[in-house]
Length: 211
Image (cartoon, rainbow, N blue to C red; front, side, top):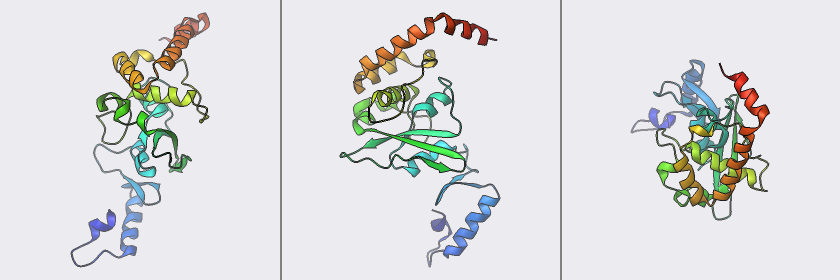
């Protein structure tokens, strides 16, 4: 993209010219390196964050799980980790190996494509349409986490029980769970969550943490 911006109708910009300009912009704080050949434009408005790079690092990645729930204040945030889900298509999955970039760790978890596309629910239910990059809604992020936590193919544990479910849209959560065929797993999780909240020790800690 940088090379195309430098090019004119007669010839392409020299490779050295392009890389010299990139280094200058990095030194000036205009570009923030993510991975080889990928940068965040710090002059863009709104300013892009690390999560926007996930779908460029792994094609088809959707930011979800801890990142979405943490940013929404539903669970503890992992500010130096960006978590995403990746679709398995035709039985083939992209590499899910984590990527370290500029102090940010990108983690990827594979899921069947039908749990991430229109078969999993209406786009307004499963995606955050306010942002300009692929990002799950909080309700979808929780269900993705429940699915992966219950799967024997991953090492990801089920979501913690100290999340703030009151911040979730219950109707949207139910619609998505029905479409993803996770209704029973969601109910099991919510039942354990209710028991957890009733625990005297948990209630005492909650009262102590209140201002």
